[in-house]
Length: 69
Image 1 (cartoon, rainbow, N blue to C red):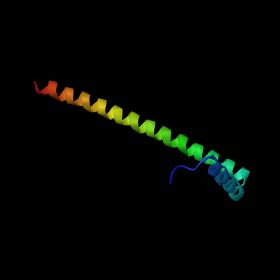
Image 2: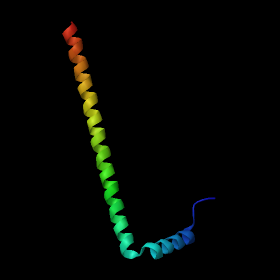
Image 3: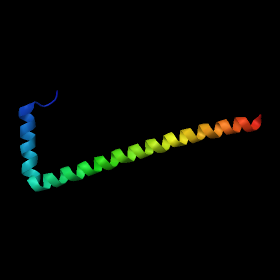
Image 4: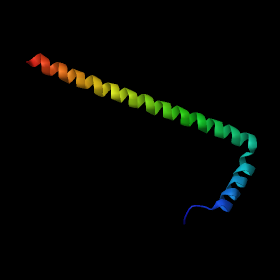
């Protein structure tokens, strides 16, 4: 089974539109977009914190090696 073709996608879209309605579908899309935006910003923040931790660990390591000499 492969990906659905354009005709199948249109039928699925019509069924979803009938089940949820246009206004509810718009709200779901907005909520989904907000969730994705929040997830991306959280991932960027986590990545930034990890990079800062790595840099901090490197500085601590170089400080420890200079103290021992």
